[in-house]
Every structure is written in structure tokens, then in C-alpha cells.
Length: 430
Ligand code: GDP
Ligand code: IMO
Ligand code: MG
Image 1: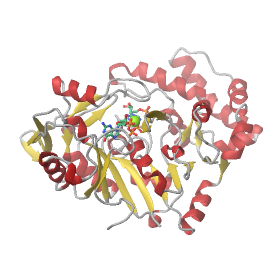
Image 2: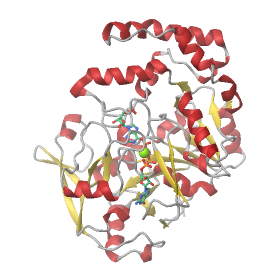
Image 3: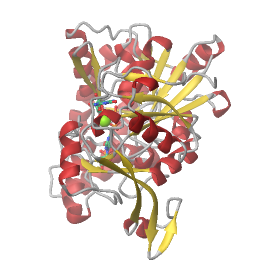
Image 4: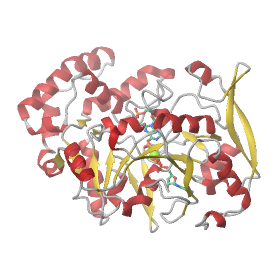
């Protein structure tokens, strides 16, 4: 039975949560392998809207065991708020598993995220302010606090002391902030220990046993390909590996066990935060798509920047993730348009680029080359098979599919669980 990795093909908010939810009853495990509560996944089930940040979207499917892998950074306050919020709506969260090796977002890292953005001024990244970057920096610097450290108070104290000895200098001398007391941090983190204990384990071992037993495992990325710290538009990225490779390091599942890679591709493009965006729209079309698509951040409420679909980017996502299947979402958001421009290549200083330019400054100067497809000018949200779609919408899907080197297996025509067209099963080749 397969292990599937599900990633975002653009700059996030492609509809990964909905895609995971769609597969929910065919899955045994859903593993979050990167990021933290910078993610925001909206899932709509029977008219009820759920916004998930830290918990894997699989938590909404009763038969799924949700796993927070070692590659995730955890804000414990947010974790329990989210668990309590779901429990109060009748969702059972008791199956959740958390890796003992996942890192903890301490309060000083949330502070540092916010003050360093302010300090950067015009050069800011536009982060979510959740402490993600500083926590991953601690991990790489080997001064991070892991979930397992919380179960040994003296180890925890040593780790927090080590982290704060440097950070307090930075906070007080550079950012003019009060130094943080080791005791306060330790006391806060210890307050979660008893609640945390039943969830924590060796999730890499549990997943290995599950795969041996033939279970179906889906590794769900937060963020997306162009926000990946290695393959994205650095430095305007998040601080983790959101591409398929991150699923291995962030879960402990080895590459030899991965069968399929599904990328979620929105029918247009959005971006939150700073950074280059070749197909960005600053006109009535951008405003229209933002409104019909309700493109406002699930995490920060910021209006998302909007642009036309960019197939150079989609091809790049196919290549770096090894995508086997695409899920094309939000096709219904084009229902009112007369025509739909699609970016098929870039022009940089008079030269055509069919692949992502290697240099970031070329990408900043990339001018999209568009091909324009006719719109269908009707409501497609009731379509449940490819044949239900008007010819122009079918042609649009085929046009995109022919240029992205992998099949489009699912097409989204609305936010609800059943508003999809499944052309192929993403779980198998057939
Ligand atoms: P994620 O971060 O990738 O999980 O995506 P978000 O949840 O942040 O943003 C995607 C939004 O689009 C959510 O509000 C979904 O409910 C919604 N959505 C997903 N697929 C479709 C679709 O096919 N059509 C429409 N209209 N909305 C969709
Ligand atoms: P999902 O999982 C869209 C963006 C932020 C910022 C950059 C770095 O819902 O697709 P960070 O706080 O991670 O250090 O911010 O990354 N960003 C996202 N944009 N969707 C997300 O998650 C994002 N997570 C982070 O806006 O530009
Ligand atoms: Mg989102």
C-alpha cells in the first residue's frame, strides 16, 4: 500500500488541507513533516468550516492517525488551543501522535521573529510572526529545545540557559527588549508536560511499522515549493523544506518507501508576504479573484497577493518534487471571466526562459509570456465528472496538463468536500 507525499506547487494556500481531507477515508496516517502554526488550512465539511494550523488536516477524518513529525516546530500553547477547539466541536483528537524529536517554539523565538522583522524594515520577509524562523535557526545552531527535553527538567533548564545566554544579549542590546528569565521559560514549558505525555513517541518507528503492515500513509506539507528554504525564492521563503524531500527528513520515512507525490496547484497564483511574483495582478482581475476566492490568510488574515497561473513554476514544482499527480484547485473561481491568461514562459532581458531562471535577480525581472484561453462563463461548481464541465473548462485543464509533465488527477470546483472531479486515483498509477 502506498506512501504518498502531498505538497503545494506554488507559494502556499493551494488547497492542501482540502486535498488531504478528500483522501481522508482512504488513509490510515497523515503526517505533518515541516513548518508549524505558520500554516493555515481551511477544510469545509458539511457546511462546517475548520481552520487548522498545527494539527495535520487528517485529524478531521475519524479513521486516520494524525502524526506531527520530527521536522515540525511546535508552539505548545497553540497545540492545546487547537486540540481544545476541535474537541469542543466534537472532533476526537486522542489518536494524535507527536515525535519526541520535534522542536518547541519557545516564547523568545516568537519575540525574536517579530522584532527582527521590524528591524529589517523595507527588507522584511513578511513572516507570520509565529517564531518559525528563529526556532529552525536554533535547531541548526544546535541550541533548540525538543519535545523530549521537556520530560527531564534539568536537561530542559540547561537547554534554555544555553539558548538564552546569547539571545538575551541580542534582545537587550540590539532590540532594546527586556531579557527573558530562564525560570519563566522553563516553568511555562513544564506546565504542558503531563498533557503532552500520552501523545509523544518514536513516530518514525511507528510509521515504519505501519508501512510494513500495509497501511496507507500521507505526508502533508505545510507551505509550498516556492517557499522551500532550498528550492524557493530565497530569502522570501519559510525556514523549512516544504518540498517532497522534506517528507523524508521530517518524518523518518526513507525515500525508498515513497510511492507517489501529489502537488496541489491552484488555478491562479497567490502569495502572502514579500518577494518576487512575475504574474502578480494589480488590477480589477486580481481584486475579483481575491474576492471570489476569499483569498485572505487563514493564519494572519492578510489579503493575499494574486496573479495568473504560472506554468513555469508548475513545471519547476513537478521537477523538484517528482510529482506524479496534480490536484488543480479553484477552477470555479474563473467562472465569470471572458478569457484567462496563463503564463507559459518568461522573458528576461530579451531572452525567453521556459524554466525558472537560476538567478534570483533574473526572476525579479521576469516578464510573463501569456497564452490566453477562452472562459466558460457559467457556474461549474456542480460538476462531478470531467464530462460535466463545459468544453472551454475541459480545454483549460488539458492545456495546463500538457505543459506540466504530470497528469491532473483531481479538479476542485468548490470548497466543500464533495466539490471535486476525480479523473484518476492519486493512490495508484492506473
Ligand atoms: P492550504 O493552506 O493549501 O491548505 O490552503 P488554504 O486552506 O489556506 O486556502 C485554500 C482555500 O481554498 C480554502 O479556503 C479552501 O476551502 C478553498 N478551496 C480549496 N479548494 C477549492 C476549490 O476547488 N474551489 C474553491 N472555490 N475553493 C477551494
Ligand atoms: P500554508 O501551509 C502562505 C509565508 C509568510 C512569509 C514566509 C515566511 O497555509 O500554505 P514564516 O512565518 O514561515 O517564517 O514566513 O512564508 N508563509 C505562508 N504563505 N501559506 C502558508 O502556509 C505560509 N506559511 C508561511 O507569509 O512570506
Ligand atoms: Mg493556507
